[in-house]
Image (cartoon, rainbow, N blue to C red; front, side):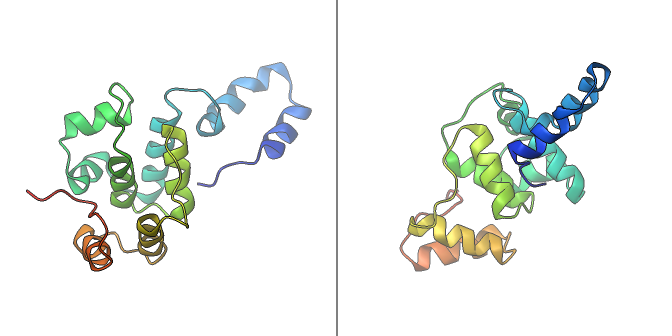
Amino acid sequence: MQNKPTDELNNLLENMKPDQIDGYLKDNRPYMAGDKKSFYYYMKDVLEKKNIRLKDVYSFAGVSEKYGSQILEMEKHTKDRDLIIRFCISGHFNWDETNRALKLYGMSELYAKDPRDACLIVAINNRIFDFAKIDDMLTEKGLKKMTKDV
């Protein structure tokens, strides 16, 4: 799912009748600003399209189902940007989808000038969703791994 440009949304609204607003709001919920749940809806929508279950995302990201759902539904807020990135990688998100998720959560997007982010971008663009391979790539460059040593 791509981010819809504001002008595209403006065009939809231009000739809309009042009885059509409910459909518009429902269809464009992931693109709305300021909705605390927009991150959750966006994640769910992307995962649904990819046919990936939330419980699998939590498992691959290395968190319990309970904690993962609290973060995703924003009942609890994390400052751990890597956790949101791990959710995205676990959900096989592409670079745009990952950046959109980070932005909706209130975090900075993957940044090409940051060496660690650059490695993550390359991994995502090459559809490397295996954390062991990503961690190897990062540690080879002397960068912090995505997963924690247990």
